[in-house]
Length: 358
Image (tube, rainbow, N blue to C red; front, side, top):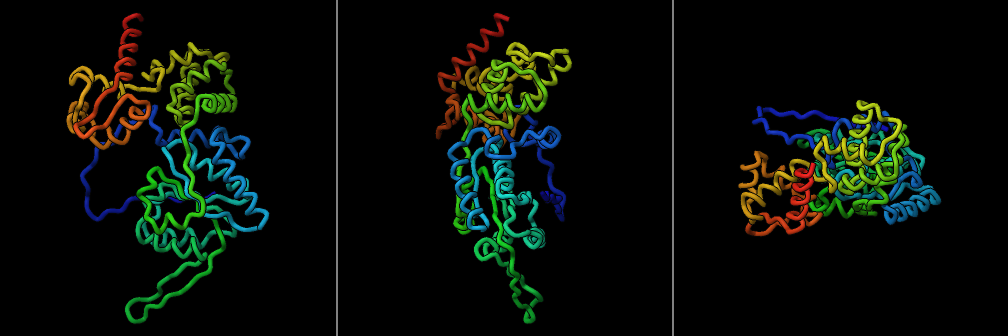
């Protein structure tokens, strides 16, 4: 597996942007997730180990078997859906099922033509190339990919001016697996070149419980079914968050010398310390809901007003905090502003009563 990385080059100094604080329940990958996955091998290696996404697994397994029987490369695949659901893991499983290598890169790393040319020229027959955040490919990179995806050829321009000529280089057949959280941002010509387009959905409670139990076995933890179910309830339907919460529980159990038996009460204690409640809401979620409820009687409230009052960037609220609240029916976006629903008010009241009783 080859991982390509790139730096950011700029001719002019740019104004530093305020970065959003990393959240325990943020589905976006952080450095800790990558490091821990490498150390503990949490990623499944085959269809049997991959929990959930049953319909997607069936579609892809049929395509894999057909490609192997014809001794051809698999059709190009576009995987889309919210972050943390297993798009990268699915690509690695595909490569393992095909018996080929998987080269991993991301679109921001392919800024210059030579970046993507070097990647394509080093591919071996039937290899799998995984490009994360493919919606962020530059126009130049896309233009180079078109003949590579369609005819397995690379068109290079040699020379300049009147001496310029086009040289065609044959490429081995390969499979491009593109991953994106924003499929609408992919250009139509690029999207049309994918033979298989599939969405990854959020996981149900039972699937998440099995994912947590599998991870706890790999960590060597004695986690009860009730404890794994408690973590599953709080992970927002996302395996990445589930594994992250499990690591926080493991840390707490280590310090409290309770590693021999992790039950539901210990999970509740450790996640309460990190201010993650029974529905997976954290402090940022509750601050937003409480502000709308207490300061604006449930709304509507404009995004800029929320951002100024909470000390957050509008884009952070819109893309990081609000989506999950809308998904569970706690928040509505209207032309007049944000409105908190009765479900959210009921949940916040129950949380307040628990604090008072404790």
